[in-house]
Length: 272
Image 1 (cartoon, rainbow, N blue to C red):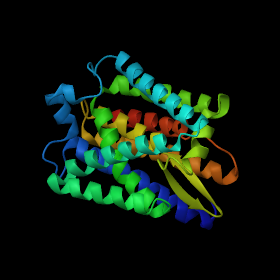
Image 2: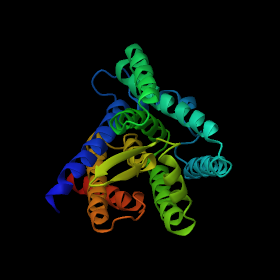
Image 3: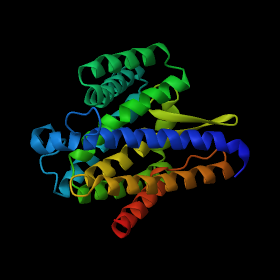
């Protein structure tokens, strides 16, 4: 790989590890966290996204939510209802920030979340600010979803979404439409400067590794989740390397990340 790609690659790695690390931190109940998200939902199942975390049908339920949300976004884009899009996206960002930072810093986290949210509204075209906000938005959402599922429903959801990602990019191509609209209306993606362009990584590509690794905490030690996350990083690096060879092309990121996660998941059984 050429030296000019080293800086964006390192930035991509740092963002991925920060998101996954923060998510596992609040999920497992690390330093400063009074009670991990997994423990919170196990003690209070009503806080979870689904009623039955052990059922494979729960993964289908979440997938249906994603399909409905995507359909509404496409509908809003079709009729140029930008204001509605921004309202829903802002609600999601604020909710994610609160989930992450309140779990980390309790009451002080509320003010930190509001500060970052206001900063994003003020500096909405600043890529650095957008990336920082995403880094603190995704851990809360991903850990909450992951803590709501057992490992095998989460694995099924991961595989289904990876397949859906391929269809949405190469088949129906509606994911391309969402990516194009995201440049202006939906700042819910990480942007990595690469030469004269930006490599966009959707929030789903960062959320799903965390959902899967967090779900593992319900049955396996934290080390297993960490190894799995590192496997996903290998898939992400492979994708980055491929995109440096194929410019001006939209590629689904979740399939290679999923392949890496599965490799890490399998290795965790051999190592531990």
